[in-house]
Image (cartoon, rainbow, N blue to C red):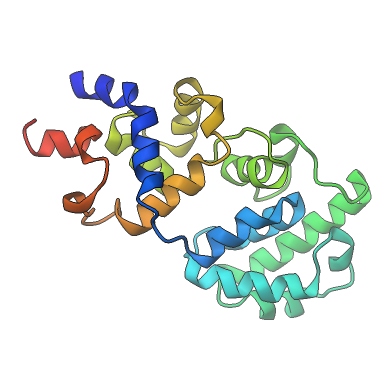
Length: 221
């Protein structure tokens, strides 16, 4: 418990240490950072679910060649879109989901993605992770997107002690200064893909291991 409290007190140092390490970002992560467009973020995030970034990136590019606005997808058939986004996981289901959401956006929202987490999660297949990413990267509104990396690393560091990503989101909302909300997903995803991996985290070269609850417990500190 002592070190959990220390980790929480060192949030600024931890985030600075990760950022200063200048870890390489995957192309998909860099692309999402450039959009500032809620629809592009939404449909690319749908592709990324249960699919790694290396696969998602080229599939996203092919999808965006077909359209960048909800209206563009109204006359695209599911087989054409499915072919473009293959081999993302559940590509046929995701193709249908994107077409359904596009149609709903045009018919009910005048082609505009709603600027509300509560409204976004009403769309079939859109959970809080996707909704928060749309808010943060699409609308540039403070929101904490918790994926597997953010959930895992937040628990390892000792910032939270939670069992689900949604629990982690709610705890991080209480803990993290709002100034970090927009970028915390990108920061921790990049950290998780390079160093703090699910299996065999590279603690020996971790720039913030001195603040990490998991590392210090394993080493008896």
